[in-house]
Image (cartoon, rainbow, N blue to C red; front, side):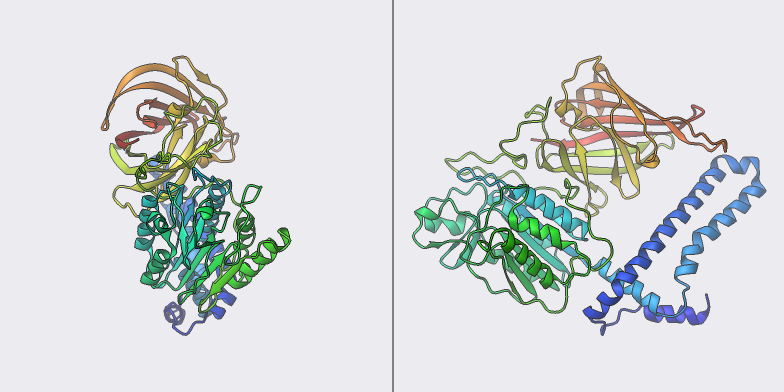
Length: 570
């Protein structure tokens, strides 16, 4: 690369204070495409280089040292190609596009999503589904999502505190609430599931004042704030109060804020008879549309809701946003909503209100939904349960990672978890673990994966020595194009000791195999995995597992041990 190109690139990479949002959004789609191509090329080249390096270290150097060195030089050249091609393109325009896209990608986006359904006096059908789908959509659009469901008053305070603590000046903040809300004397209140409101004057101290949410946003000094309230449903307390009006009251949007209501102030919204509420269904349909300005997006939502309800429900917004904003600045539209993979450590169990049973901490499970076959309610994990594991490579006798797994939500098929390395608790990963019998590969931390066989098997199955599972579904991601045959069997009941203590456990042995490669290039390939796992009903989650991998010549390639260090369960 010439010195002139280096100078141009250096100057172009300095952020420009004069760059407008309109200019950003004109260049962003192309910049995003360039970045995507560059990343894909770099991943391929890195993979080729790592393959060459692995071959050289394990086989090639002892056999053909000179030939091996030549391959290493070739690998280094291949690995450098993306930088040479993309970073060396003439002119500063491409560099500027990459800078703009990187700046947008690095913009902090934080969302607090709350769905309250389990009201004892007036349960709602849709808020849990609404909240989970919105959380997933926002996660796919680059938001760091805090998902909370069926919160008590104490839980709502804790969630707001966590939300405010994550906001940073100049970022983007979004608050979404689906559940019961009401207005009293011109002020809006969001109702927790443990509210035992019997008089009008109890509302302020048994619910969450919307002013608290707006105060958090104002204190953070975010670039753009969004408050979305799907909380105007028929209220169970309204008949006993003197001055409570229907729906929510109009609020003035603070600077840089857009307030969105599921229906106009003073009106009621429909809970809906489908999977999602009427308003949220249309929100999901438009939020991920690429390069759609946010004001246009909400207008389309309003038009869709009005058409579906024959104008009986009219969504409403109040905005003081400055500049343009796009939930999806460019690129491919987000996938349709699916079961959530996004969550973070949940709040502590809500305090019990006098004269009223405390909500279940696993109240994310639909109240009327039966348990999955074989699942024992007493053994199911609950929101707030956590386990700390350490991953050890036995071949090299090194500790690879120590992570804490925390349950954030549970439904009839899955447990939604957040995984945080003990060394860096802010680097949180999100994942879904099945309650059914499957073999899965999870991210333990960045760049480190763990293979688990039905981690919650103790909650979903009744154990007995000799119990077998055949053709267990699941794909091993390293070889995602090849089917594995996976069989498992409970072979013994025994006492096992791990750093977390001694447990009465069932030992399950899992064998996963696939055919060896059909080509004749003699490359070393993993064709067999042996996994031994110990499950203790008292711990709810797997206590220990040992994984061994073998190649087509039946030579052991690696051995990992994943063991429980501590646990905190309810």
